Image 1 (cartoon, rainbow, N blue to C red):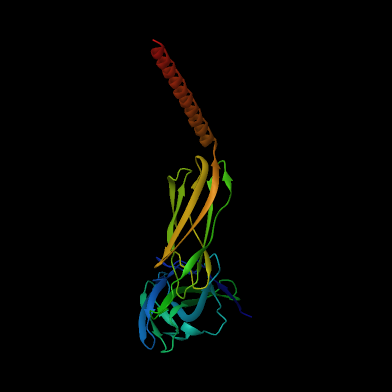
Image 2: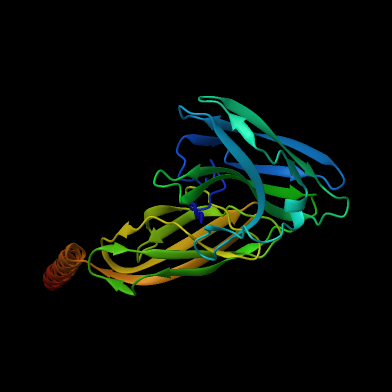
Amino acid sequence: MIKKSIYLGIATLFFVGLVAIPSQVSALGLTPAIMEINLTAGEKTITTIEVENDSLETIQLETEVVNFSAEALTGEPTFDFDAVPTGIATWVDVDEGPITLAAGEILDVTVTFNTPSNAVTGGHYVGVFFNQAIPAEEDGQVLIENKLGALYMATVGDSYTTAGDISVFTSDKDSYSDGQAIFTVNYKNTGTIHLKPTGTISITDTFGNEVKSIEVNKDKVAVLPGLVRELKATNWDVSGFGKYTATLTLTAGTVTDTATVEFWVMTTTGIIVAIVILLVLILLIVFIIAKVKKSGKKTEEIEKE
């Protein structure tokens, strides 16, 4: 009996540069691996995917169209290959295969979207996979199916809703004596299209001076509609002494949201600097008081004369 195994390597879902869904077949490449396209209800839209066989052997591929969503917080794409295609997956027209690629051959595969006239405005998400069945080397008892997919992020119409907000912004501690301040940033997409919120965390000291600016979501990962996703922010190597405020500002399209978190920093170096400053201030005050008293005595002596 032939046993079938499916191996998929799923990368974190990005919407810039590309989100790749790499398979075990390193010799197979897709360009681009992710596409953001605009569709018009009732019209046909034609796109192409470049498929490259970088191996030394001829291979055969079959295509598969699958709806996809993403895991909350991580944004990792999820696919149900056993489910019946729905929505945008039913709009896709692509050669089912087998598609034969000679060694080193590059082929442009046409992917056509037949958008229905009653298509709902907003975001629609689908994966087009290229599958290769490879018999195992031992006794022919195992069949490995490798999958490599391109993701389509489609937007239908122009009356969609762009909305979202910061759902979580925290630091891992209320006070720090050393180490790093680790920030957690979660963003919720309450609109109907995917968003790529980007921005900064501005850290200010007790006196309101900015001591650090941290970029948030530098890779511009996307948050799908209705989902919450954790966005990456660089940790801060704490320094100084006193109460600090971190202000997060994120912008996605025309939507901007802010949030703040406060914490204390009491590093050894900061404490020493604070003590030195305090001693200097005390000495300065003592000096001023002494000088005022001395000046007062001189005034009294002059008056007596």
